[in-house]
Amino acid sequence: MRIDPLLCTACMKCAQACPQHDVIGVVKVNGTPFMEVRHVENCVGCGRCVNACLTNAIGLYLV
Image 1: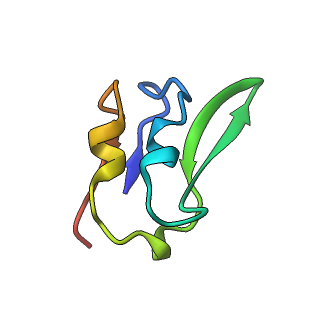
Image 2: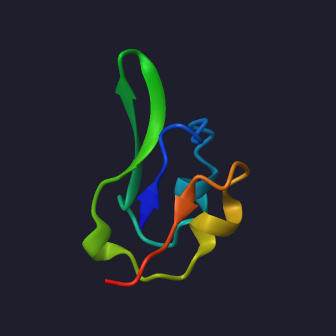
C-alpha cells in the first residue's frame, strides 16, 4: 500500500474505513498533516482505504 502525500488531504477517511488497527495513521511533515502507512504487515488488502479516499491518493500493489 502506498499513500501519495501530494494527493493526500489527511481527511482520515482511509483510517476510519480500515478494518485493521494502526495500519494507517496521520503524520505531520513541516506542519502539514497527511496520512502514512504505519504497519503495512497488518494490511489484509481489502481495498476499503482505496475506496474511501476522495482524492485517489492510495494505491494497493502486489509484492
